Length: 195
Ligand SMILES: C[S@@+](CC[C@H](N)C(=O)[O-])C[C@H]1O[C@@H](n2cnc3c(N)ncnc32)[C@H](O)[C@@H]1O
Image (tube, helix red, strand yellow):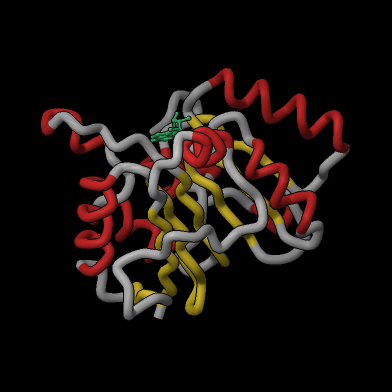
């Protein structure tokens, strides 16, 4: 459990507290620039953000207050816990994990998000036909993510001829993405669909 989530309140009654269209979840939204940008472009989609970094919430809330966006709801806590408990099975239209920390040291490996344990949780929450989007700048992590994705039978690649895409499928750039692009780093994007 997170610090204050109570099991009896979960999964969250999204249809009551954030009525609207499909549910799109962003995991590790950082300062929320991408989440807010996507919400602005897709006013009929409900965006739920998960982030454990408190300062990121403060930044996102400032953007939301400035824009008056009403289709975004952030959740503070750990993605493994919240992804698992806050959403009913097969209820989510998309999950996006942008530039999650690669945690290069072996002893920190369990913190990575693009590994089978987390991807299985995501796969359970996605509705049939739902999409998983992931991105990383880190080359070893990209290979590891590709292997982990291949290990989840209910997720099928939308780019079967290529391990990953080199261009973002989205019209909005994240804060880290802009930074890596400015440094000329090759970026790796994954799009998988729940079968
Ligand atoms: C490198 S930053 C990228 C932020 C943003 N997505 C971007 O591309 O600019 C990774 C973010 O994921 C968050 N994060 C990593 N693991 C998490 C977890 N298990 N639960 C919630 N947030 C997590 C971190 O707090 C951090 O803000």
